[in-house]
Length: 243
Image 1: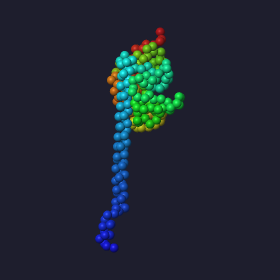
Image 2: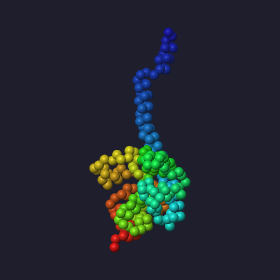
Image 3: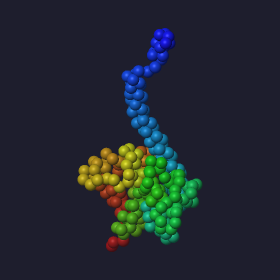
């Protein structure tokens, strides 16, 4: 065989060591790029969540202008809970003001929901399938508490308590901390993770803020001082049925 041809063939081929080096470099680059790509995807999901909340906020502003005297929030159960003709859910009320299909069950009482934007968050992989939405309606929870405490005008009282609160509070908020870290619903453990400090560390939610109804990453507000102030103002503006 021609020695020159053999030399050219040898120079053109990769040695085993060179091949391993190339594979190592590719693996290193993938290790560096994949987390960045994952973070970029989650940032995109978060932006979409905020856009969906803003869309609901536009509908809620229409409700306030039409039925809420500019500031009175809907008197409903938290989202789908307790929905009927005399006790509607937020979804029932907002159907007139949000230009989108209303979430509905696949069959009556099936517990399996079909939903679309703006009622779901792309980061929510499972919760909306059993509730029809990715959000919690916090004033609805407060109205339930006010009702149990025999508040007379609970719709006005809760709305006014939101209006005068020293800091801006969310009306709608992500129902779980699926943004960062993303985890399955109801996987929290007892102990330190359930303390205020633990909850603050894990809290990473978007919310629709009372006032100008803008959407933003919402600070952790479910602490004793905030709830105490809200309840005091709810009683102050709503009165009670007690003599």
